[in-house]
Amino acid sequence: MTGAATTPPDDGEMPAGIRNIEGFGADARLVTEPADRTTTPVASDHRGAFGEFGGEETGFLDRSFRERIVIVGVTLPGQSDADTEASLDELTLLIDTAGADVSERIVQRRDRPDPSTFVGKGKVSEILDAALAVDADTVVFDAELSPAQQNNLQKILKRSALDRTAVILDIFAQRASSAEGKTQVELAQLRYRLPRLRGAKNFSQQGGGIGTRGPGETQLEVDRRRLVRRIHKLESELVGISARRVTQRKSRQRSPYRTVSIVGYTNAGKSTLLRRLTGAEVLIEDRLFATLDPTTRKLQLPGGEQILLTDTVGFVRRLPHQLVEAFKSTLEVAAEADLLVHLVDASSPDPDGTIDAVRKVLGEIGATEVPELIVFNKADIAPDIEVLARRNPGSVAVSAGAGTGIDDFLVALSDRLRAMSTITELFVPWDRGDVLASAHREGQVLSEESTDAGMRLRVRVEDASLSRLREWIVPATDRSDDGTADASAL
Image 1 (tube, rainbow, N blue to C red):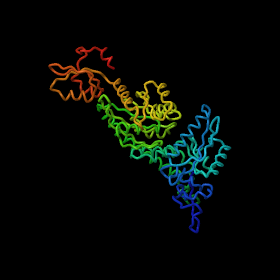
Image 2 (cartoon, rainbow, N blue to C red):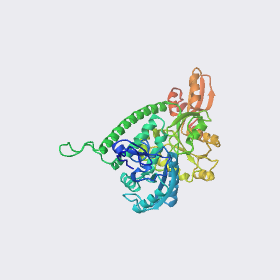
Image 3 (cartoon, helix red, strand yellow):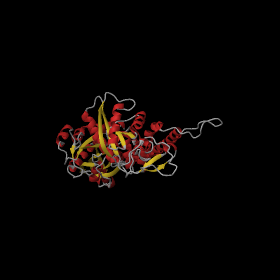
Image 4 (tube, rainbow, N blue to C red):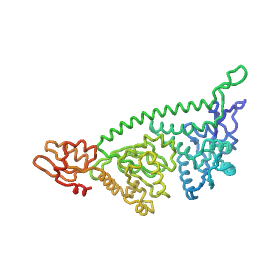
């Protein structure tokens, strides 16, 4: 809820339950004692009414204590009650990851959202009663609220009213660790806050009246200009980051190694799989969005080929557009990969729904054309793993935590990458042992034939390596094997 300028009592003592007053003007806020939950909240002095929309400056939920949350879901045409409940279950996990607890759940069916409050005045009254009954700090709607709806709800509920987007942004703000990740998250947050500034009270810098210069610039205008200036600065920083990524991408294109990106729904086990395969020291935690920053490691496949394997940020249903835009430079690693390992939590209540959600985000970043290998994870605790595998031909079942199925996965990964490579024939003189070593190191040698002048070999290599071996490629007219033989080796 929007903070208001507050003046302390003349005797210098704070009202009961209020620890201090911070900030000035529209930024002023009452700071409460979180340990004292017996104090009855009064109007905008409620614990959940910090700052503009509640919580600390870098987040939307207060982190000094675990807030009590009421969540609200609305079933609209085209949705079922089961869909709404499943989405609320996921929202509960998101809120737990953000550091708060869900105390009450409210569900409604509507033909269309109410323009002013999303749920209608009668339902808002019911939500207010429920919030008072459980002493809730914040109400979170499992939808995207417009700025006007959010402002109206906060006025009626006398506490912060957030939407699903705000919760995800809050989690990202907590989890971002790299400078790039922090910049991306801050940019997404500011883009979210900017249209919601109008809920703030207008405090003029100058007073109006006879003999004065009239009302000056309002605090709202000052805040808006400050946010816009900060957004432009962050966008400029990300342009620089994007330029560095272009340079890195060109370097990877010159590399002899194929690039593979692990994508999937959040908490599907991507970091666990990366650690299992490469030994990378990445954070593994049974929470949504445990890791945000991509990690790349080199991996040697059973046939001897080496690849670059990258763990990417997890996806979620209705991933906020602000995050997709801000993280575009990070997500591009998936769009530029040679192959996507789509990791699916086979123990999820709705694995098919998570697959669709991931593919929707991949479409937003232009990665739909990248070949995909579906890998069902957590096979040791998934009862329907065989059914899922039959519905998705070519998929592999593994348990990244237990280590089962990893060998089968690596074989499948090798086969998919080999099918994407080129088979060619080389003739290397005996005095060029470095070229022979390079052919063995960068490709898969299918056959070798020793002659008096040198070594004749058929090799499966990547395009980048092929350009470096161009000088020793045998012309098609001189090859010992015809095209049919080459094709049969695929």
